[in-house]
Each structure stands twice: as structure tokens, then as C-alpha cells.
Length: 247
Image (tube, rainbow, N blue to C red; front, top):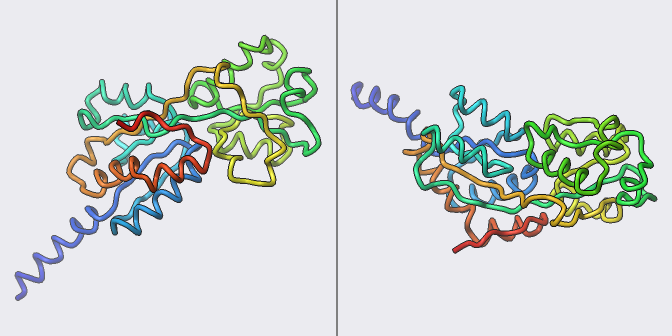
């Protein structure tokens, strides 16, 4: 009996670890991922441990051995680079959502597109383009509109898209390029953002990948599958994400 009890103590931590999955999630996907994780947990019984931040920082952390098992990036390049470096499960990478850029204003009575084009603002917030794909997309928009020189001295760079959103909501920046998902489900912001035309920036294809650290974790594989489910897709659509071909 003493032997069996000792064996049980050794097994229980392994069972507990297998019942949860650690996920690195790009900041733009915070709200939908929280809902998706809740639905996943209810359906599967597994637990998703979520961390939110910039895709660039997560890429570096994963390279340095951070114990994530899934990575939901805001782009394709970082999961693809991890794949090339042999840090992912072969064939697991797929596009889970298509991101959309919005220009948000702190002024309830202002037209954000007009403010941007006229230069009638003091500070323009965007996510650091070296770390965050939405920031890189924002720089594309400025270049396409011929506004780079006007905007550059007034830029305020957020570490990620969540911090960028806070710059605008707090009034520290009069304008900010954010993810549509951050404003789409908030009725109070319905008249305060401009949905940036897709032709002004390269498509923001957001890829998920199963990391080698999660290869033997059934919870990790279950969540990868759940991201393709009708339930998860409905949540993404609610937050304004475009959907890739699911076939």
C-alpha cells in the first residue's frame, strides 16, 4: 500500500500537467481567445493557461526556452521561423484568423480618417513595428497615404497592440492604429474608429503552431483542433476577424 501511494504521488503531477496547455497569444487576440479558452475548457475538460503579449517578444522567449506549448502569433513569419528552427511539430502550423486594422480616436466627436489625413493631431499611437505585425501594417498604411513624414515625429510606440489601445483610450494619443477586434465588440466605440481599407496593407494572416514542448500533450492538440471548430470561428467573427479557407 505504501508503494502504491508513492507511485500515485509520482503520477498525479503528470496527470495534472497533461490536463492543461500553456499558450502564448498575440495581444490583438486577447478578447476572443479568452472566450475561446472558456468554451474549450467547458467542452474538453482541459485548462488553457493564456499569456498575452507581442508576437516578437514571444518569438524570442520561445527561442530562449519559455515553457509555452502553443503559439498564436499575429503574423505568419514568426511561427514559420520557429518551424525552420526545428522548434515546432511538423505540419501543425495553420492560419487561424485574418486580422483587420482600425484607426481609433480619443475624441468622440472627431472623424479619425480626417484627423489622420489632415494631420490634426498631436500624437499617433501604434504598436512597435519591429515587434508587432499590426504596427508594421500601420506603417504600411502611412506610407501608402503619403503621410510617413508627417506622422513620424508624432508617433508613440506601444510594446504591443494592447498598450497602443490604452494610449488612445486614456487620451495620451489622439489617434491610434489598433486591431478591429479591440473595438468591434464595444458599442461605445462604434463611431470612433475608421476601418482601414484592406488594400492599404498586406493581409495580416495570423498563424498558430504547436511547439515541440506540447507534442505529447493531448490538451495542446485538442486546443489546436478547437481553434478550427464552428464555436471558435463564431467567436472570431464576432470580434471582426476575417477567416481563412478552412479546407
